[in-house]
Length: 144
Image (cartoon, rainbow, N blue to C red; front, side):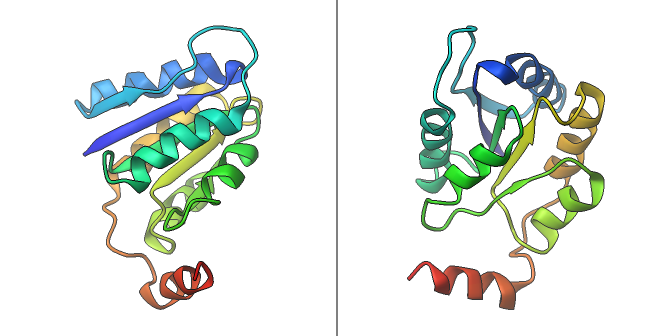
């Protein structure tokens, strides 16, 4: 598995803690930034990570901003991409099991470091198998 990860300036510390999980699991990844406190527009980071997942260069993406909502909205604009904002165990599990999401988003102002790390472990441990195929196919049909 290969992971693309990125954040805005609000979420640098949370991103670093998520990278700790990725490294602990010995998963290959690339950090698409940011790593400095200067303001950045989160859609730019979301687009960079999402394009890499969309093009098949990375299997999954992780996007972190203040709430996770803006990152999810941006990622979901890309054809074939399903991104879910996850702040609890159940939605994290269902993001893959039901919806076959390739991208998880989180909010650094919403979820703490320890919970975010646990959620990421859960998300990475669940194999993507197509989700609830009939429903995912309907989502895909809406893109056409």
